[in-house]
Length: 93
Image (cartoon, rainbow, N blue to C red; front, side, top):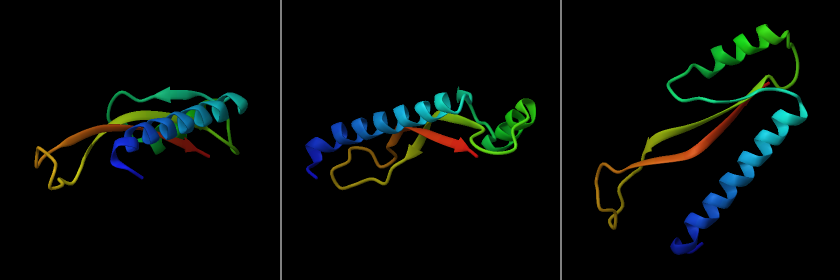
């Protein structure tokens, strides 16, 4: 894949994942929650399962935008570059 097309490819794939995750939550009538800060996802999923009385199947879908460090490349302008993204989706079953 060429470098100039990578960004658009990654954005389109992220959108596909996002739509599918939200679709799964809707189909299963389960909550979707955007997390805005540090959260223990497993603990939160357990609380949701206990609250809703769920014992099987999809519990919830979380999404979060997390900063991640990237390894510098020769053509990178900063040795400590920080990339924000991608938007992560996780599901609890």
